[in-house]
Length: 580
Image 1 (cartoon, rainbow, N blue to C red):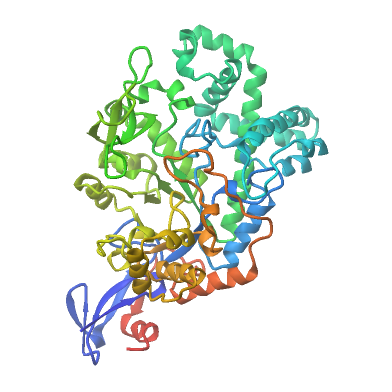
Image 2: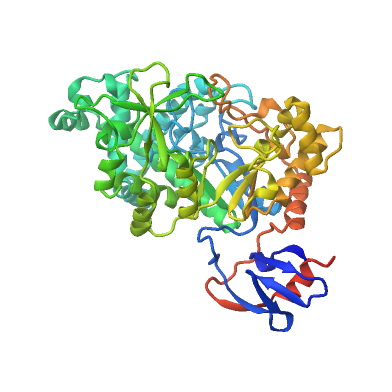
């Protein structure tokens, strides 16, 4: 008996193939060849309800795009990257969170769970629309095209947008069709986003007034949102509030255009939803009822992870902890709004720290280490059932990396969402890691590495002799050239039975540690790597296309969903597995 994996029309069947084709076992039932006709439902209606088709994509942050103004944004280079993905036979562009960042510049510590990052607004487009003049090019946005200078961007990006705001208002006030159309779009946005935008713009305006001080240190009337105090602030700060409304309007307007273009090219965007928000965030200030705060709106507990082999004192992240019991009573209203908003932004959501829905670690506020924390149960499937009831099915990838426990393992299984498999974690001293490709289920996403990993080139250069040799043997890469090894490693990910394969762009380019996105627990050089202008070639696109073709990951023409069709499994098996 021989096991054969068959992929007719992008759908998978597990077949025990008997020599001579006299009998074939499908789903553990013996079936005569002559009678072997089955029906399948198009549209991914299979055992795992959230399974994705066999496809591939690229992990590449927005800020890493080349651009004229110091940081990647929704500029022409973003559209050209979508064209590159299409040419390379890819289906997905996975980005990091698009939220506005604060201290430390981490996209996983957002200032707001809903507001976009103003750094990503394309200034050149604002110039073309007449909102900015050539004067903006005199501002310093950083001198190194391969690194983001966040100091320069922070100083001058908002300055440039402040220069654009008066012109925007003037254009809206103009008589005629153009002014009316712009004003209508703006008013529609204000209405649609009001549930978060009003708090966000006031919060940012108050931060400016209080010289960037954390809301936890504001005067009690502002910290506790005294109604009269807030009403007066809204009146006094109208100009500033209008400016921040304008910023978000431009962010969403430009993103929608880029997203629509990607869809037209057949590229789906995988967005990233951080599990936590920053302590100094609009969400914590505007919605303290969602978090574990005391009467004085000071945190009772904060997030982190317990001591382990890598850290004797654990990790103290400092994010506010959700009050899940209170959220349950409100039918998870804040979280549901968050998921709904992100589902409108992206085609697929990757939820960071998915384990947090099963169980999480909380540490008493004020502790200097994470040693005295406790593990608590999260909302589990109750949240996802309520989410489905209110929103419907949302395509989700569960970031389930880290320690596996019975609770989080059960949540992943019960949810039906695909988890993640990282090949860098597969090759260790045990030689039996659950990340090894032969252990991959169909319903998962395989990566060579994530934004928290170094590049494959750097990994192989610094791996132990055992891990490097084991990887070489496993992926059949006996080349001494590490560049060739990197592509062999990528090929192994493509070969995986995982439905989805995502490769960081730096690995395709065989880059080293200089292109690492983030080193957890470190500060100073994270979230900075950028691609050189005009660096991607047709030859690279062709090589990527070839991999997608060989390993059955090319996108197919649009198919009508929900239509039954008969498939001759034996004919397909013979066609797709000719060696048998």
